[in-house]
Length: 289
Image (cartoon, rainbow, N blue to C red):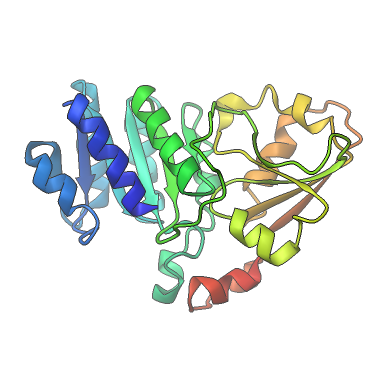
């Protein structure tokens, strides 16, 4: 997904010179093509994440759409105050690109796990979360963010090239995207966000008997229509590469806002037992249960 992001950003920057890419002395092997094509639109802020986020806010206030690219926790928890005060509260067009969602960098240890980022980012009222499930949703998310500059958080898998959609899906904040549908009378479905579609199919063997939907764009602002989706089903199993507390399922439950629903919402999320574990993403995703 990293390569897809850069491909789409290059295409967008050809038509929009206001796009700026900021990195913190990483991303090499991925970002060079953008840097070569648009040297005046690229800034390496060095290993100084909080300052980098401040630079992004200043550039955005001056009319730029800034994409801040870094690994998992580095542009989120390390920069929480700057995101809140400088970007979100001022409603500035900064897209924070978090690479290595979930346990994508699991072999580098817990400092690189992205398992609590939804909890942080979704607490900011103006922030749109873009969490694509495959490479086609990734293209759709980048295209949407380019056309709709705003405080946003693009959460992408480090190395996934998984593709389940035949074409780029039409996406809107809060709108569920059909991945596949078995029949018209399905009352038990799976709902994912982020790069968990592949793990959902492999771990839970759902394709034979359940519909599958994805929600790539969501956030605090976009809760109002969720009840109309939820009430259609008796059971929804939510899959996410994040802890349950503060995550996507928690957000979905909050959207009901005390409205009565007979729907049972079940969580398939990363177990806290993963804390302290180191290994490949494939190994660590065994803690998705």
